[in-house]
Amino acid sequence: MVQVLICCFCSPTFFNLKRKTITTSSSSSSTLHSLLLLSRFQQQQPPNTKTFSTSSSSSSSLSLSSYPAHPLRRPPFSHVRVEMTNSPPAKALPDDTKRVNLVVCFGEMLIDFVPTVGGVSLAEAPAFKKAPGGAPANVAVGISRLGGKSAFIGKVGEDEFGYMLADILKQNNVDNSGVRFDPNARTALAFVTLRADGEREFMFFRNPSADMLLCESELNLGLLKEASIFHYGSISLIDEPCKSTHLAAMEIAKKNGTILSYDPNLRLPLWPSPEAAREGIMSIWDQADIIKISEDEITFLTGGDDPYDDNVVLTKLFHPNLKLLLVTEGSDGCRYYTKEFHGKVQGVKVKAVDTTGAGDAFVSGVLWSLASNMNLYQDEKSLREALLFANACGAITVTERGAIPALPTREAVLQILPNVAA
Image 1 (cartoon, helix red, strand yellow):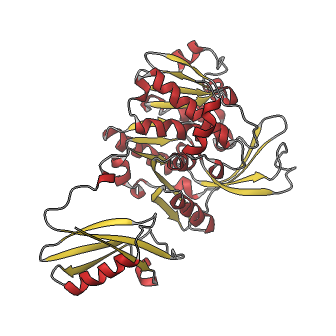
Image 2 (tube, rainbow, N blue to C red):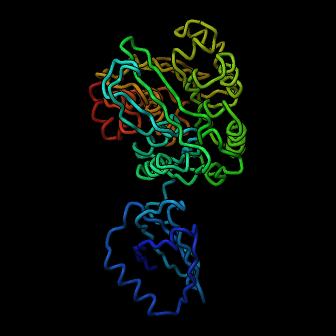
């Protein structure tokens, strides 16, 4: 087998085509010689290299796919590696033999505007720092940054913010082939702050925003069928057509044996009323395999019951098909509930700067561990270790402003864990 590397510098024609096929003759020695020269020129494979295979029969087809182009913008270049193999096709390379479970995150991706100083209301903030956000997108990036495999399905505007968000996913090694651009709606914006009284304040601009307009026909079915874990929130249930698209995606994932992960991520200002929020969040509750909620969400969903009462959680929120229910308690850690056992894992103490994205970082840590061990919830010792890791993910995130910029690497998490007892 001969491996060669082609560095394909862009042209308008190349990037305006989603797929282009080149047919080469396997007997052409000049073609092979040219490819070998290019191979010697570039010894190391770039991080965004894509692999394609061709069969050396009488003729072979080489398919070149670039990063999905948009008519208003083209990437500067793309790297493509070509493999030519004799029939029958070669077996997987050694580094491909270990399967990495894919986590697909569905929902909103937007721009968060966070005050440059803490402890002020939105009106009092002197200036804002823009940061990519949106809970499902945060989780996708968080998993990738920990070394996992993730993808995002959602919609952004055909605008500069939309392009920026799609690029940020790509830069963080998140599969963005499920991202769609809407020419008639803007990318969602959110202003968020932590006031001096400890309460978070939100202001959203979605009238409507592109994420609300994702249609079922725009779903990337390949990602849904490949996913081992499908993660989502409740914001995508508020308006049509995204609501129907969300339900359809869940059904496809469930039919393929995918674990469904649900973080309601309550944002009351986005719902028509508290009653509509409660009804919408609970409408898909019984379908999830894993659910993560906060103390405040327990109080809201149960109509004011004590969020620290295990009986309340088990009788009102734990359904028969649920594999794992997680309750986050901020810096105090988290509680876990399964059919066989329940308990609490302590938090990791840090000096908080901005709590935006802490819950998403926690979920990233949990799903990253679950993707490595799909039976994690059956072993309490392993689960506790994974939850301590997830707590550390959340703790590190609150030490910086913004969600995605603050999400930690696995190495950063491991550095602080020795100082924390499980």
